[in-house]
Length: 88
Image 1 (cartoon, one colour):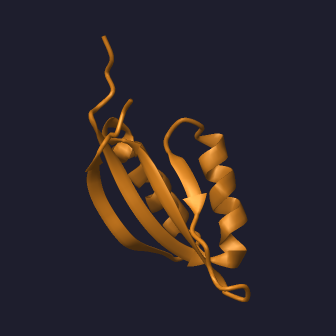
Image 2 (image 1 turned 60 degrees about the vertical axis):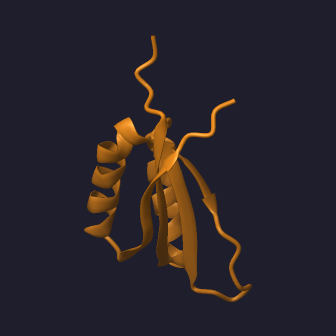
Image 3 (image 1 turned 135 degrees about the vertical axis):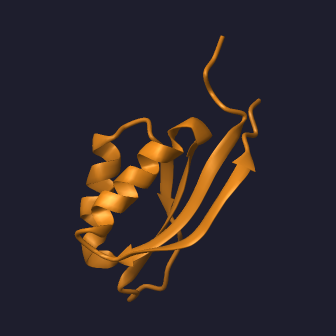
C-alpha cells in the first residue's frame, strides 16, 4: 500500500539569477521533495522561473523550503495549484 497522493502540488516561482544556484542546492539537499526544472528565459534575463512539482503529501515540506529561502532572497510565487498525478 502506498502513501502517495493522487494529486501533486505545482508551483512556478521566480527568483533572481544570482540566487538560483543556492535554491537549486537546497532542492538537491532535500532530495525527493519535488521534481523541478528551469523554464526557458531570455538570454540576458536576470531572473529564473522554476517549475516545481511533487506529491501533495510533501507540500508542507516544500512550503517550508520556500519560506526559509525567502528569508535570504526574494521569491515570487507565480503559480500555486494542485494538479492530478498522471501516473502510468
